[in-house]
Image (cartoon, rainbow, N blue to C red; front, side, top):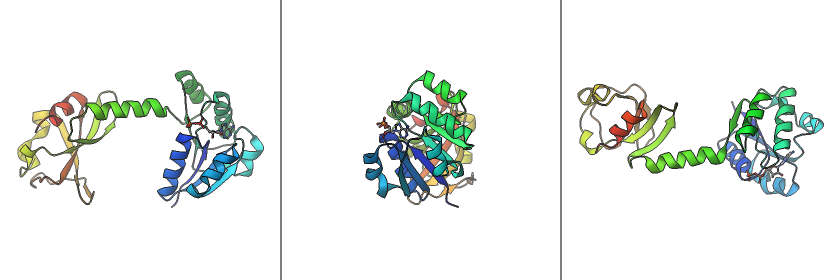
Length: 220
Ligand code: ADP
């Protein structure tokens, strides 16, 4: 079933969130108090309405509590962002995601009930830094905690034609292959056969401690 999202604030961040959700097939309502922003976004979302997210009547009129997730992407106006989150929670919106500018702002947002707070610039900066540091065969990664990650790794040449059983990555490198992805089709096999030979089209999804992953990904 299609999910319903409302995105408040069509600045660069909100606009990117809203149009991506819409492109992926979701129903998306865009709200901004600025008419120009709404005109610019009409074609990029399901509905676009002019409105102030700190006004209770406006939020009730658009039926805000019926949305699965509401994203508060108000930029510099910290006061408006706080008031909007407070109001959404009071109106019974189940899942509120808000953008924060500073640590204090984030703390307040959590205190008043935001379910998730994001720092787009800080988060993106960390991703870019990780990608810059990563070995060239690391295609993607998910940080699970400070210590552990899952990485997508292009298999090193030295492993071509070998199988997982003989490679025994768990005992040699302390990392575990949780799935194998085919490069062309993106097909994911979550129970890889330990006796099947790997080929250069295989991408390994490997979980482990960051320092072990680093050792493993630097193999050639
Ligand atoms: P970014 O840094 O992501 O580009 P901006 O600060 O440029 O963010 O954009 C924030 C958007 O949020 C603006 O388009 C602004 O009109 C909108 N906005 C600010 N306050 C409200 C509010 N109370 N209700 C609805 N939209 C708002």
